Image (tube, rainbow, N blue to C red; front, side, top):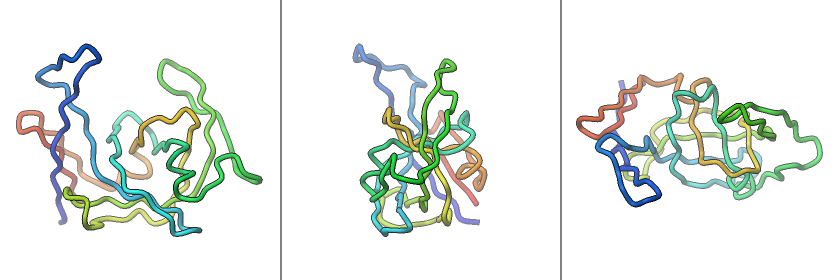
Length: 148
């Protein structure tokens, strides 16, 4: 069973302070537009509270998608604090990278992902990403482990 561990990233609050257990669960991913072959390597936030992945408009555009182009499906999602967020659906291949960002260690195949103009971070949700893994977040040792 493949297994990779990633360091948790210490979070610093706006006032410059931090907390002993304030970490971001960031992992390296490669996001590819299967139609153009264009891709971007970026860190994604593991979000166990997200039903599915959400990408910023920048990722769609960097990989050759026209965010609001002709024929692009759109819908309204409910975001943080029940705020409505307009999203545009685009097809991607999502790949998990090794901790040093060099090797692709897992691939999703083609998935349809919501993209938001508001430019949130890359959120990695349950249905189309996390559901394929056994996820362990170890705050004591400051690491996140994915197994499949």
